[in-house]
Length: 308
Image 1 (cartoon, rainbow, N blue to C red):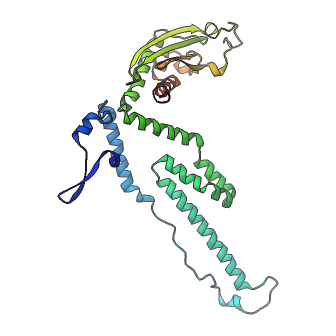
Image 2 (cartoon, rainbow, N blue to C red):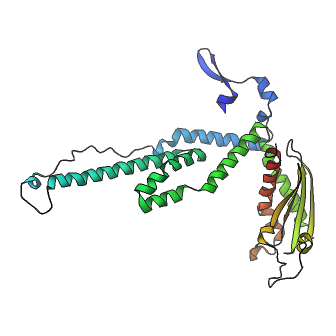
Image 3 (cartoon, rainbow, N blue to C red):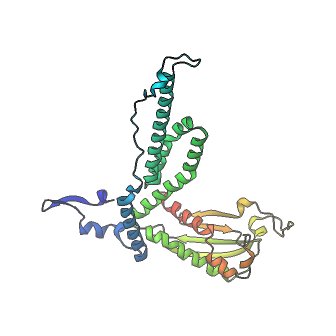
């Protein structure tokens, strides 16, 4: 970030980073949209700087072993015949094998140390991929266990998508606004649902959202409760659990309406609620972080950045 936004200038023979005031004022990415988010971000970056300075706590290395592998007690060199072979030569081979195994273990250790010290998940995955074949080939079942504990493709793409989102939102000065939009959406959902509790397990909560592609501000959020059979145009026959048969793939979904408008629907009453909360439904719906919020924010992001 410093290299791209600042220029390096020499003042009194000292190199310093400099940025012009006009550049700061003209670029939205420097605008503080939320004091709390900005302060939290500064705190995280300061903690990160401390981590970089102090991460040498795991920087020790395995000791190098330098031995005379031909060394053996003199008694074993006495020229007495045996059915095995030359004892000093065979013993030296064993020690050579031991040293080779140590070097492989040291190589593995250094690879794993580099991964443990990495601060960027994507770069850590690059390192993991470099050692996948080697570990699986030379370390058998143990190596397979190590790789399985390190490599998760879904997590890799989650990190990649997250980083791309943060980059795009920062460049447009929209990161804080985008993050805060979840709070606005959640309040609207909670206010509506809590007025209509309890919600029947066969009822669809439909929500039509219109927002600004320029700054993610909501223009309107319209809520509606509809019987599942009417929404999906299916029979209202109830099964043994008292539910209208709705495919699990339709428990929640999104319908695109226009470039900045979409509908989100979900079976808001067909969710697991523990017995201790059945008499505290407003509290449960207010505190639960339903998928609906992340689904809607993902859709808003995609409509702005993936349709350009």
